[in-house]
Length: 63
Ligand code: SF4
Image 1 (spheres, rainbow, N blue to C red):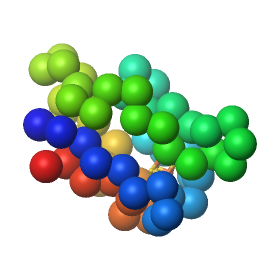
Image 2 (image 1 turned 90 degrees about the horizontal axis):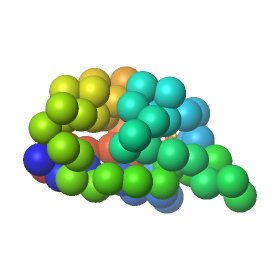
Image 3 (image 1 turned 135 degrees about the vertical axis):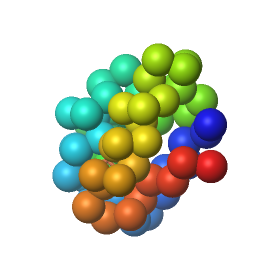
Image 4 (image 1 turned 180 degrees about the horizontal axis):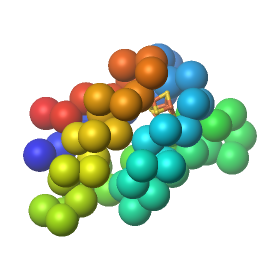
């Protein structure tokens, strides 16, 4: 599983970074998402999928 993030769509709500801080961070400049681990290890996959569904802007995809 791989995570894709569209920073043009991200509104910097931070749900992803709160949900799985090992996988998602936020830019210090504008708060948009920074992918720390685009391919999360197995133990973080469930949380990463949850973050995708929680993202209010639809900026995240699990492919
Ligand atoms: S939850 Fe979505 S909108 Fe919020 S920072 Fe993460 S990717 Fe951006």
